[in-house]
Length: 135
Image 1 (cartoon, rainbow, N blue to C red):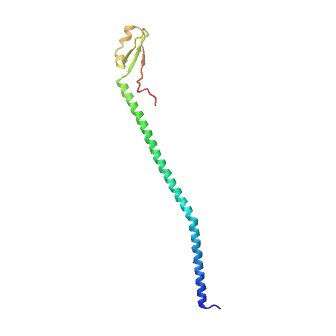
Image 2: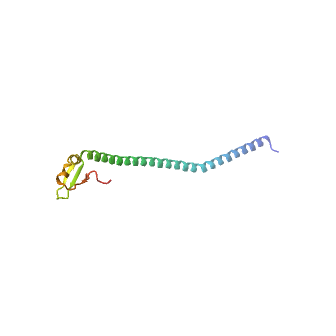
Image 3: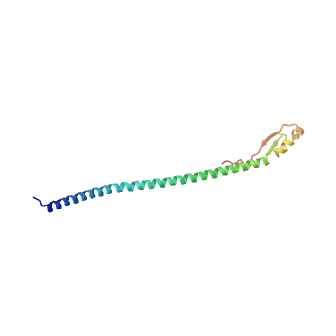
């Protein structure tokens, strides 16, 4: 038979063995989970970096598009305002090589040009070099 001292010693050994077993299981679990957690953290960081780059590049693209839009709008406004001030027209009356360039106001107010020559007059609108360029 075992003495009470031996029973206490064996019970203490069993408890220590159980603790060591639980500690080994916990360490194994930690060794298994740590690489997964590091991988997940790295993936999250990479996704955040990619999202940040996407937002920055989209914003830069919007700025570039708005700059192009603004330049086109500015050019259109220039052409419209310049066209209101100056509307050059060419008159061709097929009677010679004379070519008259007049603003629209003078053409409309000087209708007597056709009355003097009795020849048909063709009008052509000239294009402003700055306003006819393609973008």
